[in-house]
Image 1 (tube, rainbow, N blue to C red):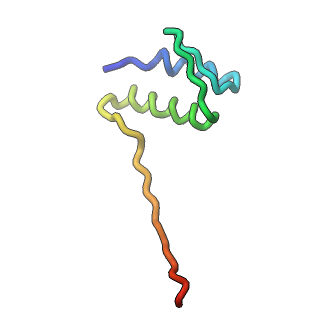
Image 2: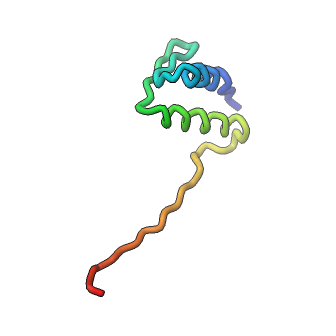
Image 3: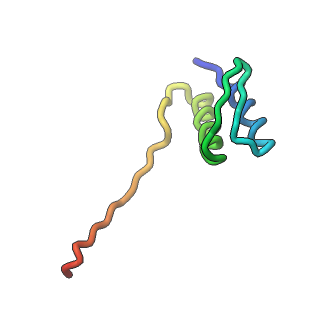
Length: 71
């Protein structure tokens, strides 16, 4: 099991300051394209911490509707 607590802490620090650029302890730096993406990354890592067997994001579903316009 990989410990993601350092990455989560770095994300928390960025969230607290409103930044979208995160610098990790190993020197790696990531610029997220939106604050929502940064929050999604944090949720994903927390999910991995809570359930290490889960390696995917939550599933989403959508319903498509089509209208041919001939009715």
